[in-house]
Image (tube, rainbow, N blue to C red; front, side):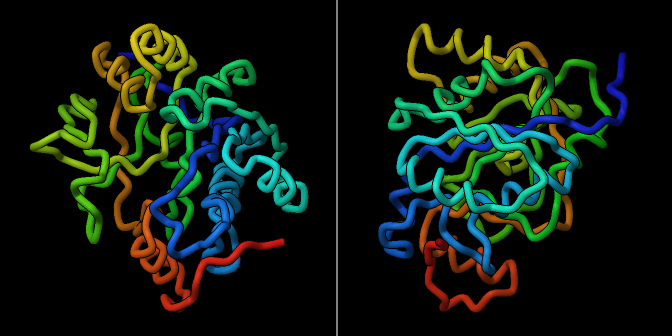
Length: 252
């Protein structure tokens, strides 16, 4: 079995196109990627993860409130080169947003959900892991706590490979953290799905699973949360040491 050598992934794709309507009671009119936790927006936390992993370029897919996000990103200080891509079908599943990034990807890349927050850098774990050459990888939590089980994307793992993924997977071994290292072949998988229905990232992953090309990488001892609801926001604030009573605010 050929193994990947340890390397730095040069590009990341950050999906920041959706509505995030379930967080509205906490954020008012603030687009979810611009919700502030511990003095930084969720989008800036995602960029920080990428910078810590040695990424050079972030391809950020925008949709809802795109002008507001562009204006904010123009003021963000980051060592990364930012490429902003607009998905005018942002009301459709998130695989459509990922496909919007395809023309700008030159090799293996990270995929990050803008609303997933970790207490410390974890993205480079996906580079350090050894696996089959050309395989894609998903960072998973084998011991999740304080999470919405029904809404979480769950995975079943067999001998290091992911055998099933979805919110409806029972029994399951781990929870999807929303961070991936993907081979560009994911775009062909999403286009195959698109022939039948608008593609989600999960449906694209199922194509890779069918070919035995999606592997699990464990995140251990690192707390994280998917910021979808006001309760998640309170958890995120606590995670980063911020008072849980503080409300989400926009930054200029």
